[in-house]
Amino acid sequence: MLTVVTGASGFLGGVLVRTLLGEGRRVRCVDLQQGPALEGLDIEWMTADVLDRRSLDAALEGAETVFHLAAVISVTGDPTGQVWAVNVDGVRNVAEAALAAGVCRLVHCSSVHAYDLEATESVTEQSSRAVAVDLPVYDRSKAAGEAALREVIDRGLDAVIVNPTGVFGPYDFAPSRMGGVLLAMFQRRLPAVIDGGFDWVDVRDVATAMQAAESAGRTGENYLLPGHHVSLAGLAAIAADIAGHKRRLITLPMWFARIWGPLADVASRRRSGPLWYTSESLHALRFDPAVAGAKAASELNHRPRAIEETIADTHAWFTEQGWLGAANPA
Image 1 (cartoon, rainbow, N blue to C red):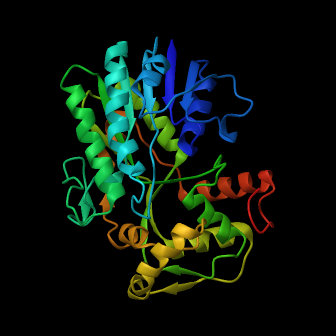
Image 2 (cartoon, one colour):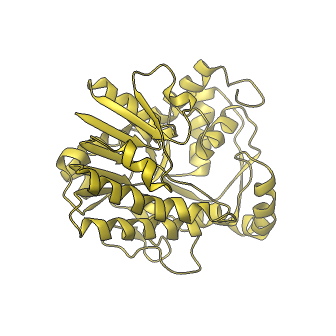
Protein backbone atom coordinates (compact mmCIF):
# COMPACT_ATOMS: atom_id res chain seq x y z
CA MET A 1 0.00 0.00 0.00
CA LEU A 2 1.43 3.34 -1.09
CA THR A 3 0.83 6.39 1.08
CA VAL A 4 1.63 9.85 -0.24
CA VAL A 5 2.36 12.81 2.03
CA THR A 6 2.44 16.29 0.49
CA GLY A 7 4.36 18.96 2.35
CA ALA A 8 6.39 16.10 3.79
CA SER A 9 9.46 18.24 4.52
CA GLY A 10 7.52 20.45 6.91
CA PHE A 11 7.20 20.16 10.67
CA LEU A 12 4.02 18.09 10.82
CA GLY A 13 5.00 16.27 7.62
CA GLY A 14 8.23 14.96 9.10
CA VAL A 15 6.49 13.71 12.24
CA LEU A 16 3.67 12.07 10.27
CA VAL A 17 6.14 10.35 7.93
CA ARG A 18 8.03 8.94 10.92
CA THR A 19 4.79 7.60 12.37
CA LEU A 20 3.77 5.97 9.08
CA LEU A 21 7.18 4.37 8.62
CA GLY A 22 6.95 3.02 12.14
CA GLU A 23 3.95 1.01 10.98
CA GLY A 24 5.95 -0.49 8.13
CA ARG A 25 4.19 1.51 5.44
CA ARG A 26 5.58 2.49 2.07
CA VAL A 27 5.66 6.28 2.00
CA ARG A 28 6.20 8.62 -0.93
CA CYS A 29 7.17 12.09 0.26
CA VAL A 30 6.20 14.99 -1.99
CA ASP A 31 7.42 18.57 -1.64
CA LEU A 32 9.35 21.29 -3.45
CA GLN A 33 12.59 20.21 -1.79
CA GLN A 34 13.73 17.60 0.70
CA GLY A 35 14.49 19.11 4.09
CA PRO A 36 16.32 17.90 7.21
CA ALA A 37 13.10 16.48 8.69
CA LEU A 38 13.38 13.57 6.24
CA GLU A 39 17.11 12.91 6.36
CA GLY A 40 17.99 9.26 6.91
CA LEU A 41 14.41 8.01 6.54
CA ASP A 42 13.50 5.09 4.27
CA ILE A 43 11.17 6.95 1.93
CA GLU A 44 10.42 7.46 -1.73
CA TRP A 45 11.02 11.05 -2.73
CA MET A 46 9.33 13.00 -5.49
CA THR A 47 9.61 16.70 -6.20
CA ALA A 48 6.26 18.25 -7.07
CA ASP A 49 4.50 21.59 -6.85
CA VAL A 50 0.87 21.77 -5.72
CA LEU A 51 0.40 24.55 -8.26
CA ASP A 52 1.56 22.25 -11.09
CA ARG A 53 -1.14 19.69 -11.83
CA ARG A 54 1.09 17.61 -14.12
CA SER A 55 3.68 17.06 -11.37
CA LEU A 56 0.88 16.12 -8.96
CA ASP A 57 -0.54 13.52 -11.34
CA ALA A 58 2.86 11.81 -11.36
CA ALA A 59 3.32 12.15 -7.59
CA LEU A 60 -0.06 10.59 -6.74
CA GLU A 61 0.09 7.76 -9.26
CA GLY A 62 -0.59 4.45 -7.53
CA ALA A 63 -1.43 6.03 -4.16
CA GLU A 64 -4.10 4.47 -1.96
CA THR A 65 -4.04 7.21 0.68
CA VAL A 66 -2.95 10.85 0.43
CA PHE A 67 -2.22 13.08 3.43
CA HIS A 68 -2.29 16.65 2.16
CA LEU A 69 -0.19 18.91 4.39
CA ALA A 70 1.40 21.33 1.93
CA ALA A 71 0.45 24.88 2.90
CA VAL A 72 1.82 28.38 3.42
CA ILE A 73 1.45 29.70 6.98
CA SER A 74 1.55 33.47 7.33
CA VAL A 75 1.09 36.11 10.02
CA THR A 76 2.23 38.89 7.68
CA GLY A 77 -0.48 38.90 5.04
CA ASP A 78 -0.04 37.71 1.48
CA PRO A 79 2.20 40.19 -0.34
CA THR A 80 3.15 37.75 -3.14
CA GLY A 81 -0.16 35.91 -3.48
CA GLN A 82 1.45 32.59 -2.53
CA VAL A 83 -0.64 32.11 0.61
CA TRP A 84 -3.90 32.13 -1.33
CA ALA A 85 -2.49 30.23 -4.30
CA VAL A 86 -1.08 27.32 -2.29
CA ASN A 87 -3.81 27.15 0.36
CA VAL A 88 -6.70 27.34 -2.09
CA ASP A 89 -5.63 26.47 -5.64
CA GLY A 90 -3.12 23.95 -4.30
CA VAL A 91 -5.80 22.14 -2.32
CA ARG A 92 -8.04 22.02 -5.38
CA ASN A 93 -5.22 20.67 -7.54
CA VAL A 94 -4.30 17.92 -5.07
CA ALA A 95 -7.94 16.94 -4.65
CA GLU A 96 -8.54 16.73 -8.40
CA ALA A 97 -5.32 14.77 -8.92
CA ALA A 98 -6.36 12.37 -6.13
CA LEU A 99 -9.77 11.87 -7.73
CA ALA A 100 -8.20 11.21 -11.14
CA ALA A 101 -5.72 8.75 -9.58
CA GLY A 102 -8.47 6.77 -7.87
CA VAL A 103 -7.15 7.49 -4.36
CA CYS A 104 -9.22 5.68 -1.74
CA ARG A 105 -8.94 8.34 0.97
CA LEU A 106 -7.51 11.85 1.20
CA VAL A 107 -6.90 13.41 4.62
CA HIS A 108 -6.59 17.18 4.36
CA CYS A 109 -4.86 19.11 7.13
CA SER A 110 -6.63 22.45 7.43
CA SER A 111 -6.54 24.59 10.61
CA VAL A 112 -8.70 25.97 13.39
CA HIS A 113 -8.07 29.27 11.58
CA ALA A 114 -10.51 28.14 8.89
CA TYR A 115 -13.16 29.13 11.44
CA ASP A 116 -14.09 32.71 12.34
CA LEU A 117 -12.37 33.03 15.71
CA GLU A 118 -14.08 36.37 16.32
CA ALA A 119 -17.59 35.02 15.96
CA THR A 120 -17.95 32.71 18.96
CA GLU A 121 -16.63 31.93 22.42
CA SER A 122 -16.47 28.23 21.56
CA VAL A 123 -15.51 26.77 18.18
CA THR A 124 -17.21 23.56 17.07
CA GLU A 125 -17.25 21.84 13.69
CA GLN A 126 -20.52 23.69 12.96
CA SER A 127 -19.14 27.16 13.68
CA SER A 128 -19.02 29.81 10.97
CA ARG A 129 -16.03 29.87 8.64
CA ALA A 130 -13.49 32.66 8.17
CA VAL A 131 -14.94 34.41 5.12
CA ALA A 132 -15.24 38.06 6.18
CA VAL A 133 -12.88 40.30 4.21
CA ASP A 134 -11.45 41.94 7.35
CA LEU A 135 -10.16 38.63 8.74
CA PRO A 136 -6.50 37.62 8.25
CA VAL A 137 -5.79 36.30 4.76
CA TYR A 138 -4.35 33.05 6.14
CA ASP A 139 -7.62 32.32 7.93
CA ARG A 140 -9.66 33.10 4.82
CA SER A 141 -7.37 30.99 2.66
CA LYS A 142 -7.83 27.93 4.89
CA ALA A 143 -11.61 28.32 4.75
CA ALA A 144 -11.54 28.78 0.98
CA GLY A 145 -9.27 25.73 0.63
CA GLU A 146 -11.84 23.61 2.43
CA ALA A 147 -14.56 24.95 0.13
CA ALA A 148 -12.46 24.03 -2.90
CA LEU A 149 -11.96 20.52 -1.52
CA ARG A 150 -15.69 20.08 -0.93
CA GLU A 151 -16.37 20.77 -4.58
CA VAL A 152 -14.25 17.74 -5.46
CA ILE A 153 -15.80 15.65 -2.68
CA ASP A 154 -19.16 16.36 -4.31
CA ARG A 155 -17.74 14.83 -7.48
CA GLY A 156 -16.82 11.59 -5.74
CA LEU A 157 -13.53 12.09 -3.84
CA ASP A 158 -13.43 10.35 -0.44
CA ALA A 159 -11.83 12.96 1.82
CA VAL A 160 -11.74 13.97 5.48
CA ILE A 161 -10.63 17.30 6.97
CA VAL A 162 -8.77 17.81 10.26
CA ASN A 163 -8.40 21.21 11.93
CA PRO A 164 -5.57 21.34 14.47
CA THR A 165 -5.00 24.32 16.74
CA GLY A 166 -1.53 25.74 17.42
CA VAL A 167 0.89 22.90 16.62
CA PHE A 168 4.19 22.57 18.47
CA GLY A 169 6.51 19.92 19.86
CA PRO A 170 9.76 18.04 19.12
CA TYR A 171 11.26 17.27 15.67
CA ASP A 172 10.85 20.95 14.74
CA PHE A 173 13.82 21.26 12.42
CA ALA A 174 13.19 24.73 10.96
CA PRO A 175 12.12 25.64 13.68
CA SER A 176 8.52 26.75 13.18
CA ARG A 177 7.36 30.14 14.44
CA MET A 178 6.03 28.64 17.69
CA GLY A 179 9.08 26.43 18.00
CA GLY A 180 11.19 29.57 17.70
CA VAL A 181 9.19 31.20 20.47
CA LEU A 182 9.80 28.23 22.77
CA LEU A 183 13.47 28.19 21.87
CA ALA A 184 13.70 31.89 22.74
CA MET A 185 11.96 31.18 26.05
CA PHE A 186 14.40 28.38 26.87
CA GLN A 187 17.35 30.62 25.96
CA ARG A 188 15.96 33.61 27.88
CA ARG A 189 15.98 35.70 24.69
CA LEU A 190 12.32 36.70 24.97
CA PRO A 191 12.06 39.82 27.17
CA ALA A 192 8.27 39.88 27.43
CA VAL A 193 5.06 38.18 26.36
CA ILE A 194 1.65 39.51 25.43
CA ASP A 195 -1.38 39.06 27.66
CA GLY A 196 -3.09 36.53 25.42
CA GLY A 197 -3.30 32.82 24.80
CA PHE A 198 -4.31 30.10 22.40
CA ASP A 199 -5.00 26.40 22.21
CA TRP A 200 -1.80 24.39 21.68
CA VAL A 201 -1.60 20.76 20.51
CA ASP A 202 1.34 18.38 20.30
CA VAL A 203 2.48 17.66 16.74
CA ARG A 204 2.64 13.93 17.54
CA ASP A 205 -1.00 13.93 18.65
CA VAL A 206 -2.01 15.62 15.39
CA ALA A 207 -0.13 12.98 13.38
CA THR A 208 -1.87 10.21 15.32
CA ALA A 209 -5.28 11.81 14.80
CA MET A 210 -4.63 12.15 11.07
CA GLN A 211 -3.92 8.43 10.87
CA ALA A 212 -7.15 7.76 12.74
CA ALA A 213 -8.99 10.03 10.30
CA GLU A 214 -7.67 7.90 7.46
CA SER A 215 -9.44 4.81 8.79
CA ALA A 216 -12.25 6.10 10.99
CA GLY A 217 -13.11 9.58 9.73
CA ARG A 218 -16.39 10.07 7.93
CA THR A 219 -16.28 11.33 4.35
CA GLY A 220 -16.69 15.09 4.11
CA GLU A 221 -16.50 15.64 7.87
CA ASN A 222 -14.34 18.12 9.78
CA TYR A 223 -12.54 17.14 12.98
CA LEU A 224 -11.17 19.83 15.27
CA LEU A 225 -7.95 18.72 16.99
CA PRO A 226 -7.42 20.83 20.11
CA GLY A 227 -4.86 20.36 22.84
CA HIS A 228 -4.85 22.69 25.85
CA HIS A 229 -5.61 26.38 26.18
CA VAL A 230 -2.67 28.15 27.83
CA SER A 231 -1.63 31.80 27.93
CA LEU A 232 1.76 32.86 26.62
CA ALA A 233 2.69 33.72 30.20
CA GLY A 234 1.69 30.20 31.19
CA LEU A 235 3.82 28.69 28.43
CA ALA A 236 6.76 30.85 29.50
CA ALA A 237 6.39 29.74 33.12
CA ILE A 238 6.37 26.05 32.15
CA ALA A 239 9.35 26.57 29.84
CA ALA A 240 11.26 28.38 32.59
CA ASP A 241 10.63 25.59 35.07
CA ILE A 242 11.79 22.94 32.60
CA ALA A 243 14.90 24.94 31.63
CA GLY A 244 15.70 25.73 35.27
CA HIS A 245 15.21 29.49 35.03
CA LYS A 246 14.07 31.54 38.01
CA ARG A 247 13.21 34.80 36.24
CA ARG A 248 9.65 35.24 34.96
CA LEU A 249 8.88 37.26 31.83
CA ILE A 250 7.06 40.58 31.84
CA THR A 251 3.48 40.35 30.54
CA LEU A 252 2.47 43.30 28.37
CA PRO A 253 -1.21 44.28 27.95
CA MET A 254 -2.85 43.58 24.61
CA TRP A 255 -3.57 47.26 24.00
CA PHE A 256 0.15 48.01 24.14
CA ALA A 257 0.94 45.36 21.57
CA ARG A 258 -1.85 46.53 19.26
CA ILE A 259 -0.40 50.04 19.18
CA TRP A 260 2.85 48.66 17.80
CA GLY A 261 1.21 46.06 15.55
CA PRO A 262 1.45 48.04 12.27
CA LEU A 263 5.16 48.74 12.85
CA ALA A 264 5.72 45.09 13.70
CA ASP A 265 4.09 44.11 10.41
CA VAL A 266 6.76 46.04 8.53
CA ALA A 267 9.59 44.78 10.73
CA SER A 268 8.50 41.15 10.42
CA ARG A 269 8.78 41.29 6.64
CA ARG A 270 12.40 42.40 6.99
CA ARG A 271 13.49 40.12 9.82
CA SER A 272 12.77 36.46 10.42
CA GLY A 273 12.36 35.06 13.91
CA PRO A 274 9.80 34.74 16.68
CA LEU A 275 10.26 38.06 18.46
CA TRP A 276 7.82 40.21 16.50
CA TYR A 277 4.09 40.30 17.25
CA THR A 278 2.32 41.17 14.01
CA SER A 279 -1.25 42.37 13.65
CA GLU A 280 -2.29 38.93 12.43
CA SER A 281 -0.55 36.99 15.20
CA LEU A 282 -2.13 39.35 17.74
CA HIS A 283 -5.51 38.60 16.15
CA ALA A 284 -5.08 34.93 17.05
CA LEU A 285 -4.07 35.77 20.62
CA ARG A 286 -6.92 38.25 21.12
CA PHE A 287 -9.67 36.03 19.77
CA ASP A 288 -8.83 32.68 21.34
CA PRO A 289 -12.13 30.87 21.86
CA ALA A 290 -12.40 27.47 23.45
CA VAL A 291 -12.04 24.72 20.86
CA ALA A 292 -14.33 21.70 21.17
CA GLY A 293 -12.63 18.35 20.81
CA ALA A 294 -15.53 16.02 21.60
CA LYS A 295 -16.05 14.86 18.02
CA ALA A 296 -12.38 13.95 17.49
CA ALA A 297 -12.25 12.33 20.91
CA SER A 298 -15.28 10.18 20.15
CA GLU A 299 -14.57 9.22 16.53
CA LEU A 300 -10.75 9.47 16.27
CA ASN A 301 -9.81 8.73 19.89
CA HIS A 302 -7.97 12.05 20.04
CA ARG A 303 -6.38 12.25 23.50
CA PRO A 304 -3.92 15.18 23.64
CA ARG A 305 -1.05 14.67 26.06
CA ALA A 306 -0.24 17.11 28.87
CA ILE A 307 1.28 20.35 27.66
CA GLU A 308 4.08 20.02 30.23
CA GLU A 309 5.10 16.77 28.52
CA THR A 310 5.18 18.46 25.11
CA ILE A 311 7.32 21.35 26.34
CA ALA A 312 9.68 19.01 28.21
CA ASP A 313 10.11 16.80 25.14
CA THR A 314 10.70 19.87 22.98
CA HIS A 315 13.36 21.11 25.38
CA ALA A 316 15.05 17.69 25.31
CA TRP A 317 14.96 17.62 21.51
CA PHE A 318 16.38 21.15 21.19
CA THR A 319 19.13 20.08 23.59
CA GLU A 320 19.93 17.04 21.44
CA GLN A 321 20.24 19.33 18.41
CA GLY A 322 22.76 21.51 20.26
CA TRP A 323 20.54 24.58 19.93
CA LEU A 324 20.21 25.53 23.57
CA GLY A 325 22.84 27.87 24.77
CA ALA A 326 23.47 29.19 21.24
CA ALA A 327 22.32 32.58 20.03
CA ASN A 328 20.53 31.05 17.06
CA PRO A 329 19.58 27.52 15.96
CA ALA A 330 21.97 25.82 13.58
